[in-house]
Length: 431
Image 1: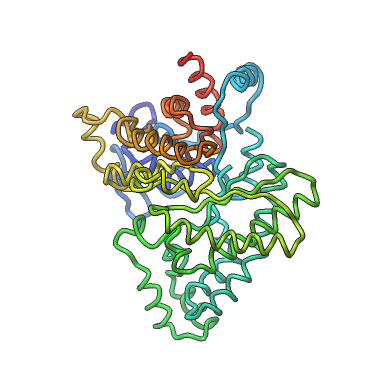
Image 2: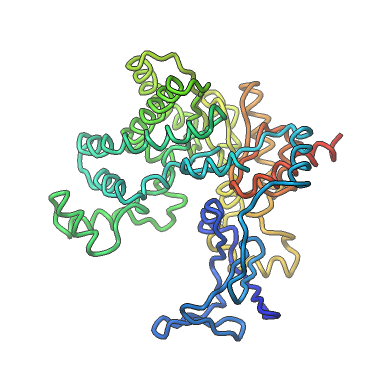
């Protein structure tokens, strides 16, 4: 770390979960900066011999980790002029499709202007979080279903907005993925209000919240494991997806084919259990709404076991999306939220040449992607294959995906132009 000409170069995390989520929102984020010393009482922090007080402006570069002293003017990203011409040439040449990660209709609109929809971010709205908390605190299936039914109009409205903005373009809806502890209250006032709403004591609410604590939540009760434990969650989300798609198709005339993705699968029977719930609900909605709409069900390959057994999983999955963020941390065996604390030593000693969360490790993680692709196609020749996560915006990773024969890459909206250009360069480099 050094300071020069008003720039502080910080060794912080730019591929942590927090930074990735922020990047998807178009916000620069540098996390895990251990060198920053914060004085909360006097409201300032020091770094590289400089002091920044509350109210002072700093500017972040989420790609390099640079922190600039002062308020640097920014402009809205746009594709125009010669850049627009180059991008059109790239689109004519590339064979890889480029998708983007969007959690709201506004995100999707931004992506079109330049999708994977991660549904969990929709639940944190002020109107919705009490309902998801009621579901978590409920003691019976009936009570959980009642709470979830209150969420259907909100989820349906979100999905309708996405389908309308995307105008028939492919939309993949990833079902609820994070552990439930992320939704429970931590402030005393919120806990007390929830207790009153649920007719419980504060102690009972705290006990339930405490019981959700996990030592390693990223490898805990999340993803498809939630649907196995609480099938009503998958049923609620399926109903919202299908009703939204059918209504928008009828109202707008768009050719919508919902793609439902079940996350964190590591076993074929696990996928089949959740898939059966989805199919049962989807077919019921189609019958209720007199629709013959088509839909597809796939999974995210983010556990090494799923890559090894991809031939079996493809018996149930119509598409794979490689979740390379989680696949990388599970393959390497270290957390992307903590690895920034020690990876510098690996770069200095040349054990690693680059951050494996920013540039796909083609020898290890890439071998799993390649193997899973081949095994998946052996079982289901027409299976659709892609990757999801920040790797999709890295040029070397995009070229690897082209060589392996994936159908698409997906990345944050603000990295889509990079992915489009890299996909065209991959074609030219591998003629």
